Length: 197
Image: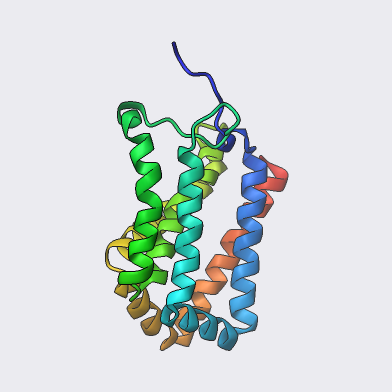
């Protein structure tokens, strides 16, 4: 029998996903533009702090557990299809992975956790944009595909996050250009979400 349960992500309207994503991008890039020193200090502190990585990885694990928890009450439950027999094992392994990484592999933990967080986050707006009518919906996956690629590098080679960040802050003009482009992109998403979606 085919399962017709609608996942919570599929209930998110395209315009809502666009508005939230646009507001986050605009707020983030405005903050970096208006307070570059503070932004640099926050990221540097996160890179150097095992605690920041432990907390963010904990959020990742809790999110993952919520996706795995069985029961009709759980609107976040995802289907595992051929891997369904592994559901119980994954529920046990996820907190063990957090424990191992949080105690034994602390170096660059924030970058790993951030990469994993972005990989899990991307599916939310991507699901909202999937097979929708307005062609402008492609603004969502066009943003997320490069982010997903970078996030996979951060999970596998977390030192790249640190290296890329330090290289970027040495070039203020490049940082300003990236922030302006991010601000414009976020604004464009907001306009499309409010007027067309």
